[in-house]
Amino acid sequence: MSTTSASPANPTESGRGIRRILVWDVPIRAFHWLMVLSFSGAYLTAESERWRLVHVTLGYTMAGLVVFRLLWGLFGTRHARFANFVRGPRQVAGYLRGLLHGAPDRYAGHNPAGALAIVALLGLALVVTASGWITYNDTAGHWFEDIHEAAANVMLAIVGFHVAGVMIASWLHRENLVGAMVTGRKPGRPEEGIRRAWRSVAVLMLVTVLGFWWSQWRDVQPGAGFSERPSVSVKAGDRDND
View 1 (tube, rainbow, N blue to C red):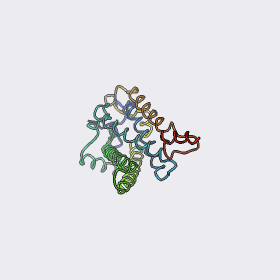
View 2: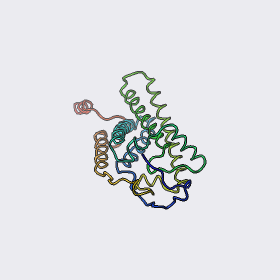
View 3: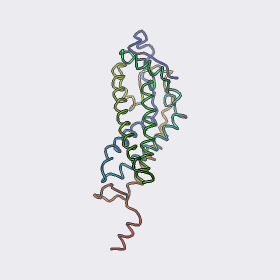
View 4: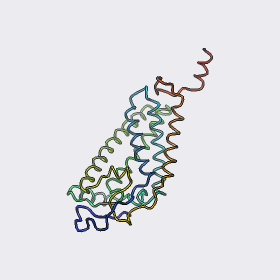
């Protein structure tokens, strides 16, 4: 379980044994920014037929990333594990009360409110990708398209609240939480840090994602757009017509 450390609410502890420590491993950081890229790209291309293949590919990428995050939440490093940061309603309410009074407890990893947002976003991402797959493959009624759109909009709203919470917490704790998700480091006690960054797992994740994108987009002709990946039968027909 994460322990609290120096914060504006505990001025007597400020600076006592605090240094920059490694909190976020590289896979968590890679997951975070790939998820940001995938959701943003998928949302922006949702209404465009020309960019339909990009939308679908990024949706599948989100699904794969969520599966990885669920596994890493069970077997990953200390602050990545759900058992370390997911808390009950009482802890979430206590943290939010502290936030409203300008003196929230500080956590080395995710705070209770941030943890709630993460769980909600992971769940919504599964709903978005599942309903999107059903809609794209036309395996059920058109009402799944409404579910897909509604879940995406709710997800966008939670992203907005999450970003606002990060900005507020960064100001109150006087630390750059966005920068921490780039470098992996935050101020904290040495015993709160992790020992290994697991770069090899992040490299494997990135190679897998880029390989998947290449497999989806390799047949797209320059200038033809990403409306649909050409099928083998279509290309064969074109050759016959020639």
